[in-house]
Image (cartoon, rainbow, N blue to C red; front, side, top):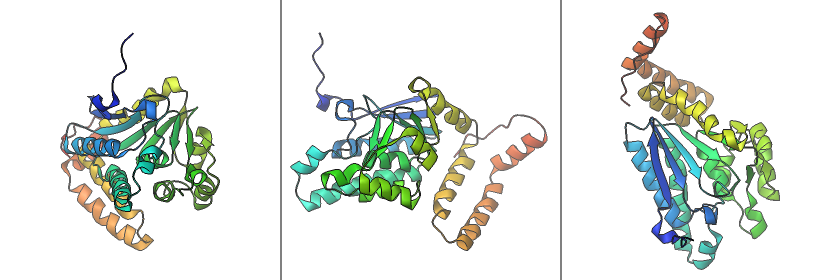
Length: 267
């Protein structure tokens, strides 16, 4: 029997790229991929590297082991009572979450098992999410005396106020079908079909213009919290800039000429 590998000798995040898709897999399955400071630092580095790589067209966030992500590491939190240390942890987590929306590439959460607290937040901050039928989602901090205030930022931008408050004040988990009905995930499939469901999205993303995708994602997040009038003013300017992109002319010409588009490949 092989001796177990010391977690300290294993990378927190495994990165692999195939066909323009970078998969970032949280690699602490025995801890349900808790978002320790070490894990957050590894995720931030991996996200930055993916964003800087023009060959990467889509980013998938996944987890090893029996669940996707259990949120913050409670043992680590109890071991560090210094408010400055705790604030640095939450700032690091918030930075990772925001960077997911700032990546030029679309991001997809591949969810199995549990996604709780900041793990549920991680799902909500990805552009898309695919879940296995057995996946469960929760904001259970209230059960241990720590209200899920930062996770509520992301989940509250996916789910209606009444429903996210239900998750926050009860701490009860919701199943994958409910998460789908409430708008937290895009697809729910059997675990055996999880990779195929992710590929459904990544294949379409990779087949489109990288520069148009990056511009569109950036515009979506820039306008979503603006007033209606400001949002239309801003996106009208974005649309005008979009039309100046050579890939825009190529895409429309290809459609009119009934042929496949030849995208530039730049971002």
